[in-house]
Amino acid sequence: MNHDVILYLAPLKGTTEIIFRNIYAKYFQGIDIAIATFVPLNHHKSKEKVRKWDIPPASKQKIKTIPQFLGRNLKDLAHLIKWIQYYGYDELNWNLGCPVSKIVKKGRGCGQLEKPQEIEDFLDAIFDNFEIKLSIKTRLGMSHPDEVFKLIEIYNKYPLKELIVHPRIGKQLYSGSVYYDYFEEVLKLSKNPMVYNGDIKTREDFLKIRERFPKVKKIMIGRGVLKDPFLPEKIKGIYTETIPDFYRFKAFHDELSSTLQPIFREEDEFVGKMKEYWRSFAYLFEDRNATFKYVARSKNQKEFESRVEEVLT
Ligand SMILES: Cc1cc2nc3c(=O)[nH]c(=O)nc-3n(C[C@H](O)[C@H](O)[C@H](O)COP(=O)(O)O)c2cc1C
Image (cartoon, rainbow, N blue to C red; front, side, top):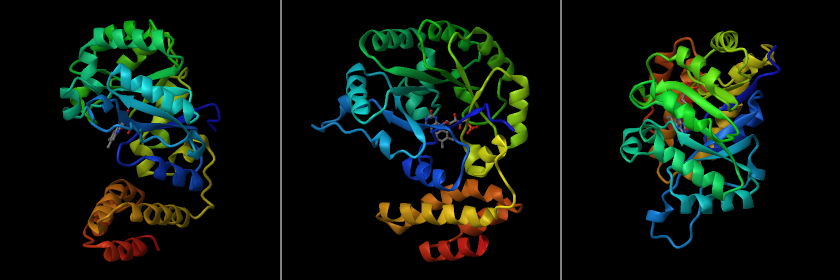
């Protein structure tokens, strides 16, 4: 039993948005908190008169959710803070981990990690100007994990709600070795509470992290939840195999699919989105590659639906 662990659902843009989260919460237990996928602070560049953030009211979230922003425009941040406070949130997360090259090139996400002075200046401005709880989601650096030592000095100057660390560097994107030794160092140095994030795909992966970092009570999981939606329950020891898995998964899948379908104008786009989910869902099956290929070869919605029905019954 792991009742003392707090599990976070990681933000996965294009996948774990509110529709997914709310339907997930209806069928599965174990996730305590979610970080929403990022909203970019780029309204200052837009010609729109009315600034709207794609962040629904907190009361509509079935899992307690913390909004996340990317970028460092103070005016936009001021507006965003007003927006989220109006909608019932009291906390924000700053994305300093996104390694996507388009974003890095603009000096945002992970690209920001190469400019620690800018991070410090922005944190000064945030803590001088706003009353909001702030957490940071970071990597160890952009090009070398040693970058983290300068970063941690900066993060330590501020009373962050928490520091979520994915112990990779930006250049690795989402694969390659996780720097556990560096995470251990950061854990020793950090004055802020820490959350571990990265590569937990099974209960065994979780137990290894638990054993190595027993002080870390907060664990964030992203791709592992998509590949095995039962994983949080397995981690917390509340998963019972007497529940027919595929029946529950199918009910979840059907509701996700029927809720997403009307959002897409084109059938192709909807089927494309579902195939993206299936890239992960296929991990539930022993013959993962064959299952994914079978679903992914659907040419239209009707075929997709009948193939999924076949796979899930
Ligand atoms: C497709 C995709 C989209 C992501 N979107 C975000 C995002 O919006 N905000 C963020 O902080 N991290 C984002 N991440 C990073 C994840 O939150 C997480 O840090 C990473 O996947 C490692 O955790 P995992 O191994 O448990 O998945 C994304 C990752 C992927 C693969």
